[in-house]
Image (cartoon, rainbow, N blue to C red):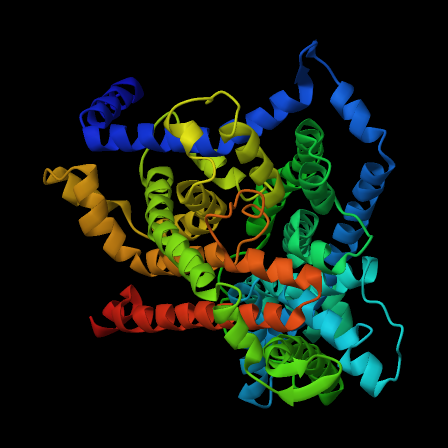
Length: 569
């Protein structure tokens, strides 16, 4: 059969499956409407005025000294956070993969450190930093007797973001280091090279693309971060906070849109380099799983200093997270350390805590299964099916990863409070819980899709083709064959989407209305007012909810996941 005939047959099969065609059309409509359209509206607002196409809005914002300063500040913070996070992540990954640890306690510490940023709101460490090292901080005021210390500004943001994001680099680099064939390094050792020389001449060149990848991921996260600079930045402006203040303080929607386009261009450029250059180069550099077990380093001159350094950093990070529940239990942080439960009581009695948790929980609960299912459907179409718009679906679904939350929030304001849809159902979305759910879905979609693509690439095509040959349509194959095989990824995506949704802040802070109270918005509001007891109480309960969700996911996967099924069979 010729290639032309084969394509013609595939096309006939494709159009003979109405469920598949309908799914693709609905997906394209969803991605276009809720990802591309808001970004397009930002471009329209930035370039088009009553006088036609113009650069006057960009000229106006570039003339603002605070905006120019914010660009420089953002790039400086992103660069330093990216470097520090990558180096600390590499240190943790190297110690876990290459060093023989004497106790399992360190492995446990590493696991705790890697999961804490996932299950906590993005600005928890900012609260801890202020309470430990601020003017009323326990360490600065009571241990070091420094009464005028300020943690606000450049170094406050850098330290908090580094401690928040380095676990991401650690998880990425750990996988890369495990995949290096140990024989490559041992050959250099056998030729008399010292460990440092082996690391610099063999190990480091092999993981350099992966290290660059980790740097760029962290750089993107840093410059897109809104919550930490808002709480601990003080007068040190970043792009995310400047955009927020431009629309909420100056009521300049066009100016905010132009600023958002500048931030979007920076993150998109970094995302393209990271996604299409460094990721491909990283996978080509490594040869897959190690051919045999690695001989772990046992020399005390190496193991002792590295282990101590990692332990100190891990304990410090964990201590900062532990500071949050204590902040909710002390009567007045920095002055009166008598234990009390008044802050937890006030959360529910005075500050509508029940409504905040109910709204956040319900919206996240609605968004998470939709996100997980959409992620698996997109992954299935990208990996298992061939059609013309496949590249479009994959690219746009991943695009949300590169769009800062503040940018997306402004895009939704401009797109759904005006824009093209001035009347009708879509206009009615603005200010509703449905729009918040859509934002949660869009923000979590890339993570679930990447996980699903990785899982589906491990499944042999013949399993699904046999079901197709027996007359099953795409929907039946997906529900009865594919989804059960990747249910670990589905469950993981479900909980990840829930955790990301309930801890989100940057995109929704501009979209939430008085009709809805969300926990993260409440925490941010009280932290800005200096009401740290209430903020810590909200944050403690939120961390408890998200950590419980992760534990339940692990239990479900352990007892009902595909890995258990494989062990039993």
